[in-house]
Image 1 (spheres, one colour):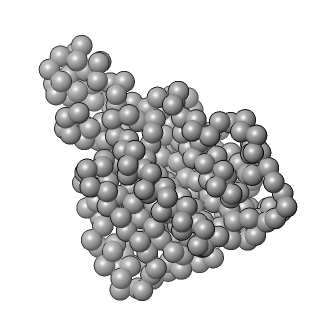
Image 2 (cartoon, one colour):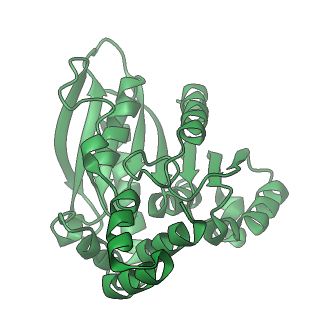
Length: 285
């Protein structure tokens, strides 16, 4: 697909661009209203393809949990292996700027299937949880207080450490908005063992010396918006002596790991990035 169209959709999903303006620009790029509506399903997510690990997988236990956040009761989707003969490492899974959706729940199940205690937190819990309409969900993110949100996720990390199934070691993995938050959790939690950020906003260079966790950073080569922050971040990581891995997947777009977004999904990049993610969890948890 025309990269201009993909870039327009990225702008729509990450900036205050109304659907009306987005559609007008899409019609202009595709040449007609009919063509625009034909392209639209290729851009938008399709949750019918979300379950790579089914909800009722016989090897997993699924729970909808709550814990006390900074100023609200936080909701979480917890997945864990059914076997209870040993304690295990735990992972917080952090969603994109559309909230806790079927795809992110599937990612949590993938983490659990790999042998870990996994919890996907709904950042929109202060508003009652993620609404079905994605545009409504996106609008709610602008109403989140950044520091309050970070504090609520830090409490989520503490909640996982205290779970009876946990061995006390915790990591996080985030995507897009969640990738940026993964970097922030690494800054704010000195006990965090590992943080994996997929195409997420980088932490400020001045905060990098606070990071004690091992970092793993994944970027799509075509993601100019997010990649603009790589040089300063990497320079700060090197200067601070932070343990990090940084991978740029050439030819891949933003959201290349999201297999419910057919136009941007890159199977090759996603497979390799996930293998690297699980390897880091094995080494740290």
